Amino acid sequence: MSNKTKNCYYSKRHLWVEQLKGSHHAYIGMTDYLAETFSNLDCIDLPDVGEEFDVDTPLIHFHVGSKIYPFPVQLTGRVLEINKDMQSDLSLLFMDPEHNWLLKIEYDDPDEFDDLMDKKQYLNYLDEL
Image (cartoon, rainbow, N blue to C red):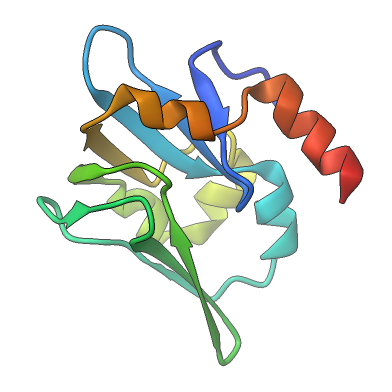
């Protein structure tokens, strides 16, 4: 796992969230663990810019074979930008999943980050799997 900034948090679904200082903006991406799990990924469906979501809304859908895996972001807010490069060329995502973001969002409640894990907690979580 690469060395992300101290403002990076992780979900139990293996997505990272990089909280951007001085704003209510964050980048969302997949962890190395998820990239290894979905190494045979066919495509990714990402939401539209402006789409609003809550904690349980699946925003990212990974297609592997005939299965679709929905992933919520675990925050409430709206989509500001999608990384079309990652969506159109999946090889870029697998080159460095811990740095190649999928979504940029504006989140509503910074307290929701309390429900995510910091890097140390996430590494401990991985050890338990």
